[in-house]
Image (cartoon, rainbow, N blue to C red; front, side):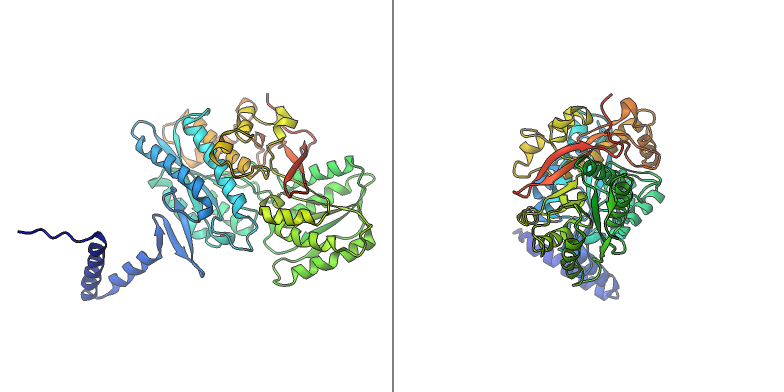
Length: 491
């Protein structure tokens, strides 16, 4: 008998047609549901949601959310495959990196900043699994996409919770920017007993939440560090420009914190009430920013403190550059969100000719300026010739995002290692309890500074770099500071 072999694509079509025909014969409901589920799936653990549709959920790297992530996505997937293959000899747990990976124009983060966060996260996974900090259990790093502006956070958080058993998930890192949606995600994960480490969240009111800590300085820390720097420069007058959009926790807490910190000086004063705009009002906030320089020309402050997102700052700088009092010079000081701008946006901002300084979350030059304020082995990976430079040679690291992604996962990894020493099965609650033991000799050897935590989950005496936007649109290191005046150091 002659054996007939059909091409694979033909077999697949015949199989689908057979299933549909059989199901229709049985009533049709199963067929419709099966086809809908099949068309909605992007990959294992990832589905299409929303309009326009986004692929959201959790992947071990087998699925790619976007082309800009490909180099680091491939490395994470390969490492996860290696960990899974060796599971019989070396136990593992999973850590998710949660943020918005499918971005739109109105997202506060850029593709560049998100990619670098994930590169840093992979570096921490590598160091823990088989690098200079090798420890057990090993870590699978899962990539969790909550969608543009975290619009699908509920679906993705549910998927993360489901992975506690199938992937032994114990911790979530990253968490995205300071927004009400991301805060809601934190509260849901907290209720489920999952350990969390925020990477770039700075809003002061995201604290005192069970199982949650963050490695970024708070907005209060940034405001006091900025105020101290300005006072040392002899600045005595300021105006605060603040976004009052509901849900923008970053802007609200940053503006309030700077107002308090600057006003505490004996010589310093705000020359006017805060000037506000509302970024939630479409086609209006740009006009609000355009009218502000006219008022600033009358008030003549030495510094304008901008408490808003980086993408709003670029519009404000355009307006300032075209002010009707060009002889009046003043600097603009901003918070860390400026580091989320694209290289093109930063270059455009630099062309305005306005002096721009800002508090960052980290910078590779921090270690050179203050060697005792950051871990030498960790910092070395972010220098020229370091691991990140060799793995991703075309990606600059002066925005600090890679350092923050690294330190968030490194903190989770250290918590996992500490919990595993005294118990058999590592749980999310056990890892979270270890965060409160990370002090003294157990402080986290971060690339952004040595890290220990207060009871409210905020880092203690976290190093804060003062940065300047140079003429090429790059972050130029000025000095390292802290809210208390002196960052934590190596013991």
